[in-house]
Length: 69
Image (cartoon, rainbow, N blue to C red):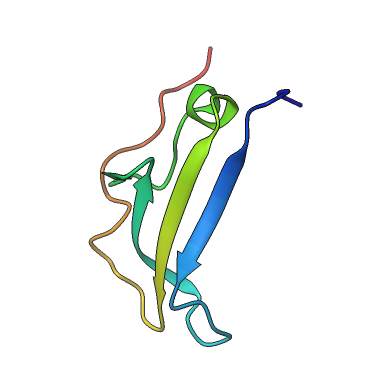
């Protein structure tokens, strides 16, 4: 728990048939990866997800998370 740090998740086009992420923004900046760091989460902020009925195969292709030792 991070006292005073609020992390909000907002969605657009949210419905039972729109279960694929079309695009994402983290604090207003386009997110090209399907992941973000724990540090970004713990700082608080806003994750915006635009949803759709078909996969967007171009989204989330910005690379893999760093490996942990």
